[in-house]
Image: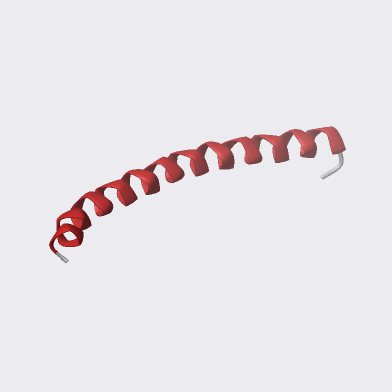
Length: 47
């Protein structure tokens, strides 16, 4: 992997893609938690 600048660029690209993927996954998890909370709410009111 001769060129350090090239490998640095590659690592930067990987990091960027990883961040984007994490952000999407995060918002998915958030939506899932909200849906679960909404489902659990009636049971909480009953108890």
